[in-house]
Structure formats: C-alpha cells, structure tokens
Length: 177
Image (cartoon, rainbow, N blue to C red; front, side, top):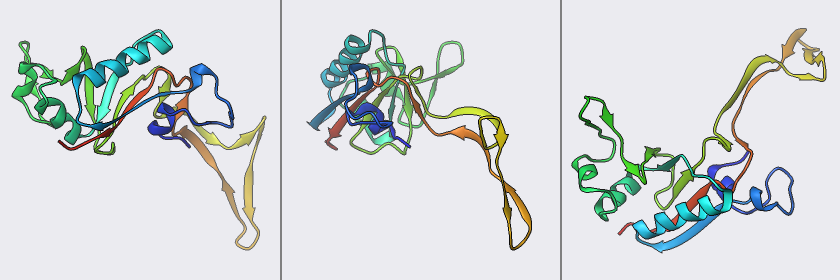
C-alpha cells in the first residue's frame, strides 16, 4: 500500500530498489509561506520531467485559504471562501483554479502539504469485478474445521496503482503564515 506522499517521493516502491527516472516523484520543501513562484516552479518541473501536465491540485481548506490570502489567486477567485462555490455566468458552480486546472479540497491532506496530481498515472481507486480470490484458474475457498463453514475471500477493489511518478508533485513544509 502506498500514499500520495510515497508516489511523489523518490524512495523505492513496489520492490524497486533503484527506481528509474520515470519512477521517482517531485518533492520541494518550502520551509516558509506558500508562494505563486513555488507553485509555478513545481508545475514546470513536472512538465519538464514527464513531458505533459498534471491534472489537479489536492490540498486541504487551510492551504486553499493560504492560496487566496497570499494573493496567489486572481481577484475573482477571492469572492468565495474555502468550501464554498460561486455561480458562473451560466449558473454553474465555479471551482478554484491554478493555471487553469482545478483545486480539489481534501481535508485528509496535511496542513503543510499540497499535491500536484496526475489522474492518468496514479489511480486512487482502481476497481475490478468482485469475485472469489483465485490463483490462475482455481478459486480458493476455506473451510472452518470446527464449525464446518465455508469461507471464500472476495476481492474487487485496489487502493492505489502508481504507473508513473514523475508526473506527480508535492510541495511540503508550508508554514501557516
């Protein structure tokens, strides 16, 4: 099992002791306030290392507030607070953006971290049909010898699949002010 922090890092994953260049992420530690320059630098690093863009920023509402307060966002985006949306000209909901890409608020992200996420290379939940656990073509069922109950393990969803890591980034060490 791996986390988004593991995906953005350069440590070994999936038993690879020396990861190839495509299988290491991008981490920058700020040890200071969030700046537009640091965010643009990470975006550029990702584009240069993998050859294409990330899809969304993932951060908690504290970092979204820092994003707004440090005048990183445009004046129009300052019209609403984290967790709120506004209506656009067509009556749809407006979403906070950075470089034209959406910002997703997830309260599970730590206060000092922002992820640059690529949904094509890192799958947060990859589904497969539910069915009995099997090895090759034989299903595996277990029998409880004391209660005479059959127990078949059913599998169908995997937590995370990381195909490529250099399209992922993490800004770390963001201070509160």
